[in-house]
Amino acid sequence: MAYVVTENCIKCKYMDCVEVCPVDCFYEGENMLVIHPDECIDCGVCEPECPAEAIVPDSDEQATEWSEINKEYADKWPNITAKGETPSDADEWKGKPDKKQLLSPAPGSNA
Image (cartoon, rainbow, N blue to C red):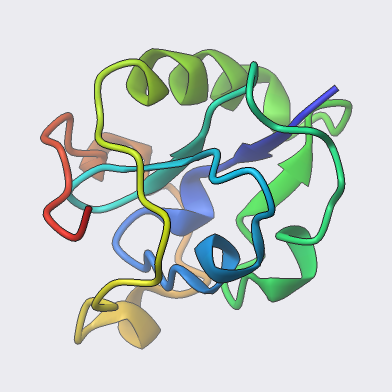
């Protein structure tokens, strides 16, 4: 089992989760983070740290479509081990639905 970052992270990318991860399994895209499923130890410490409530266990129904997205981009984006700069408009995007089409395939720059 592993945890999965869902679309709630898109355009929010608070990165509080990165600070608490004991195995550094977060990878950063331009406007979202993902968790590498083969590196996550299923400890769950990241889930309550996410202000956008974007992290769920892979057994959650929300995780179904996002599990593959997490794996795909974890293999492409840089690993991030410390909290970076949160987007200035993150709070405006928090809780907005239907953000999947806004997912950028570009890597992040805080790594």
